[in-house]
Image 1 (cartoon, rainbow, N blue to C red):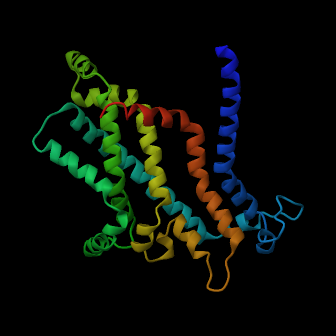
Image 2: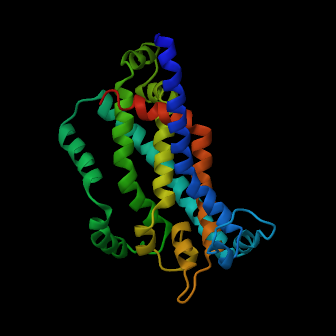
Image 3: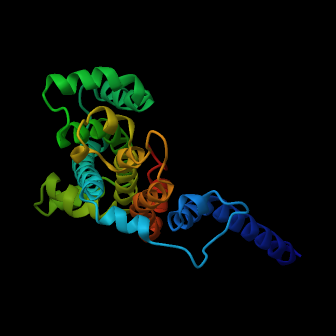
Length: 278
């Protein structure tokens, strides 16, 4: 009897999952389809999918335009540097929080959590003033330092929770064999914590890649703009180039989609394991 009830439930669950997957994926599919049409075809009624008149003109215009290619180069560079710095600094900070007791540990933890609770727009004006004072306006350093402020707290909290699930016996075994805590961290704990690091790295990359507000406020020239700003610049005063906007949006979404497709197993494992013990 139990087996008979399981099969309909499994079918029903599969149907709901397929519906959810279609609901989540259709905007991306429609974005791709629209990027292959002209403005007139995009707003035609009834709407059409791919027909004989589809064109790659929008993609050609993007990849042959050095200014638009620069948007992608800037986004890749800033996001990559932010991911590396976030993981390196976050791993060391998380190890300290997980393995040591030190003065003001609770207060520092509270500050880290409070940073996560502050809406970014509240910090825009004071942060912009600070960046201008330090003469970092319209530079990569301005974007990288800004994004680190928002990605590091999450990284530290998640990896600390992940390290807390690992026995301290791993550290002690390395030190008994003559190794240092530095070796225990990078040779033992970091490889074991790979799912957690991948999930944090993906989250960090998405945050840096998709960020719009500070990328707009802290840059002035087009050679420093990132992809989200580049998409906005395609909006003209009297008309929009929808096909190029859709093409750039699709190309901008592609890195995140590829990362999740290849690393979804690590991402899900890291998100669940890191939340087991704080």
